Amino acid sequence: MFQLSQRRFLAAALSCSMIVSATSALAEDTDTIVATWFSDWGDAKYAGTIEHLDYVNPDAPKGGEISMGTVGTFDSMNPFATTSGTPAALSSTMYERLMISTADEYTQPSYCLLCETIEYPESQDWVIFNLRKDVTFSDGSPMTAEDVVFSHNKFIAEGTPSWRVGVSAMIKNAEALDPYTVKYTFQPGIPRKGLIEQAGATLVFQKKWFEETGARLDEKRNETSPGTGAYTLAGFKAGEWVEYTRNPEYWGASHPFKVGRENYDTIRVEYFGDTIAAFEAFKTGDITFRQENSSLQWATGYDFPALEQGWVTKASLPNGTMPPAYGILFNLRREKLQDRNVRRALGLMFNFTWTNDTLQYGLFSQRESFWNAGELAATGVATGKELAYLESVKDLIPAEILTEPVTLAHTSGNRSLDRKNLRKALGLMEEAGYIPGDDGKLRNAAGETLDIEFLQYSPNFDRIIVPYVENLQALGVNAVYNRVDANQYQARTQSFDYDVIYDGYVNSFEEDSSFDQKFGSRGVDDIFNPAGYSSPAIDVLGEEILKTHTYDDMAAVVRAADRIMRYDYFVVPAWFGAEYWVAHYDMYEHPPTDQFPPLALGYLDFWWYNADKAADLKAAGAIK
Image (tube, rainbow, N blue to C red; front, side, top):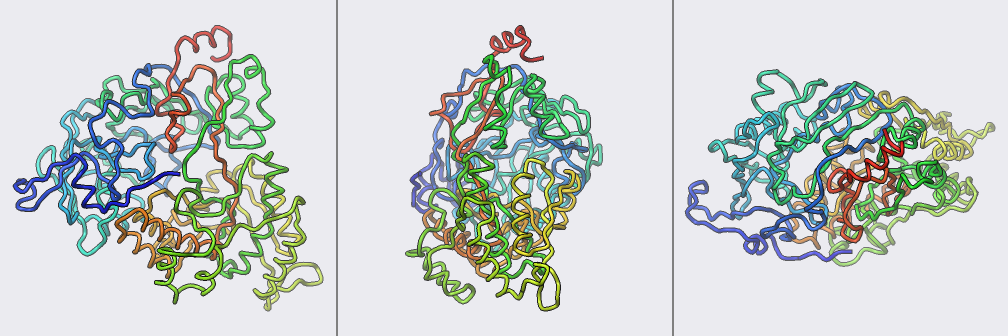
């Protein structure tokens, strides 16, 4: 899919339009690399001087409104309180990071946004951010180093517990050297991979506002602090709608990485009680943009008058992102699900072929890998570097992982209940100690049934999950499907109170310290590890990822991990789509699809509003 450089970090760093100074006052006598970007792999498409990103229209007009619908509710404007309240959609859109990435680079280098340059030694023991002096908050006040340091410390004190623990283990401290210079010092004795990017990912808040209000990051609240972003909060009604407006005095409007982006004057999100109400609102023009996620709706629902009259555009657009590793996910914190044979048996009862052909109109493909793209997915029998990494943990994994082809998603027939897989599942359950009784229920040696609750909140999943639960019942499992409201679902999943859910892991083309947070043993009780997965071998490979110097080596470690995790079988592979399904009233425009970046749809980023088309639609009564 793409080719990546295998140059070592230092060689790349010395060739990326940077200055090497042996007399820097900030670095004392240490040779210091000065740059406008950073990458662990040495590749950066926009390393030189640019006028704008390749995938935007630099002449895109500013103005207009885009309105979208979502199902659920909200009771907070604080997106950082992960265990207190339900935040409004896009409630973090008002804040910016020190450095940003682009949507057309798989290796995701970080580029200065709120900074002019960064400085760091070859050892990467620290990094200095030389801040821009023209960055202002939405209230017009300047952003300074004190705000950056305050923001970092605020997250360490009040952010998500797992984030606090993880980042504290990486960053020793942040300090303001002067009003526009911040230095992050990294913890000694840990791998340096990902540390500069982590520091550059700092979201910046206004210190003055937080000190005056006493607001905390871990509590729900309706008030929002000034941010440096292009949008501010225009208004909201809890649980019904929220609206953001573009700041006409936005400091970054002419920044090369912002030209042609953030073009709407207003972004509005309407909340609905269910998907039917949301779709009806789109059909009548109450909302104007819809990214479809229901294959049933996409295949059968788009036959309403606004579409037939040409007011609405329906399109499938290219999607080059890494498919999330979602599927039927087992909570390994439950003792009854810790036996791999039990999980394999339960997984065999999911019929992807019948589900896709009958219920999803053949619109999807079946996911196989946790990294279902590029060079990161394991295939066949392990060889080369991947095999070498597996051999380094051979005492921690079953021997067949080194010699047998990688575990693939099971295949099924064209009937909902696949009899062949049912027989296999019964055999696996017998190996796990479960025997069918006279009533057809599977029971263990203690006479206990296997009770499984499939928890969900969206009615969109009913037609997918109900046949699966029926197949589990045919196996002899005491299975139930429990659809709860969104707030209850959030509360239960945040406290890991579930047996089986449809969920998974969001992986990327570049893995670093976040790998350990998702899959490492220290993350068993982390919200980013919904299955509670833990493996000593994966812990070792997580450390190896941080030691790699080339993308090829990193990819080999990930393939080895992918092979182990697929064997351990804690997420039953489900479906993914290679396209975005989009419908909107014909007043939004975007660059040509052959110019689209592979990693973003970008409808809130680099699309724009055509005022003439909007006026015609309003005159025709198509939109409000």
